[in-house]
Figure 1 (cartoon, one colour):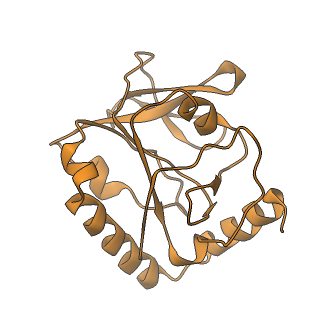
Figure 2 (spheres, one colour; figure 1 turned 120 degrees about the vertical axis):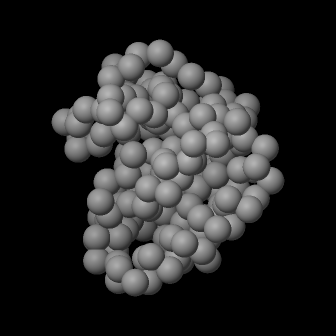
Figure 3 (cartoon, helix red, strand yellow; figure 1 turned 135 degrees about the horizontal axis):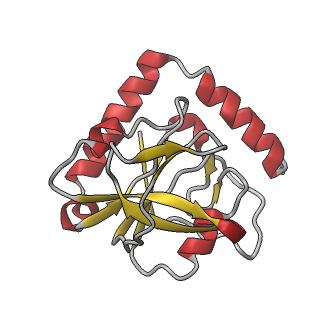
Length: 171
């Protein structure tokens, strides 16, 4: 079994070199599935993430005005909250991620969990900070991930803190 660091490096490269037309096709197919799902239809407050250029393109979802959209904000001790998404009130963190200037925490009922690789049972390899696993440890709502075909792996190394996502949307 490959180590998480090795998989992170491999998946970042694969995402950065992903054929743009294939990426667009898979993104559209995954978003269509998600928007038609009961999970999306029943959610009132959805936590999305602000993608880096190589990550899953959330542009369409962030433009949705029918739902309350919140985004992650990192705090000290690798903690995280979600705050209302306002494209005019964002700043760039030292990690190169856009976050909200707000400090008002909002609890979503559906979280879109980012990552680099997943197994069929929802375990994932994220970026290594543990922010989502810490938040998800006490979260009782629904969790989903959007996964390109090459990001699915048969197994990954796990630890006791890893929290699986409940639903995977993929092509």
